[in-house]
Length: 141
Image 1 (cartoon, one colour):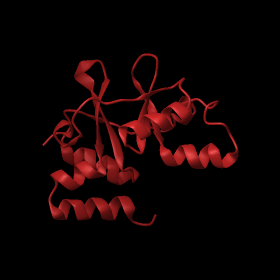
Image 2 (cartoon, one colour):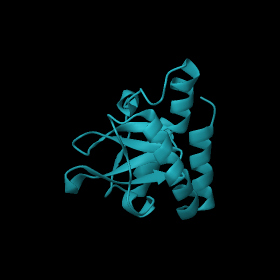
Image 3 (tube, one colour):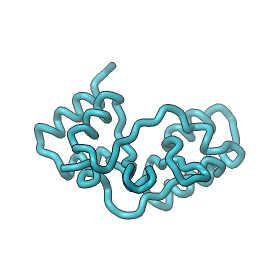
């Protein structure tokens, strides 16, 4: 099984790095998701933004989400090649304790082609693999 086999299907949407956090929040609402990739003007992956980032790092500090660019949150980024083995994708998620992993099609000009989420893991892996994933991702540091 490859990362592409493990990832969520369908069109991947991202928020532009120059778009506001308010735009990101609306897109999350409309898509019924809690995180979005941030893409640059070149349509390449620049980072990730979560609903929690918006609340904790913007709203709680009294900033206006309509005035803060999503690109401000384009910090450290983890991703996986679409052709990589699914076990490698899980290892990246476990090692970095992340619940969402962007999938990049390296053979297609490094374009974002999907996301691997914890729900993908739950749907496609064995109970033992899910237990190991949960232990690694959710265990106390």
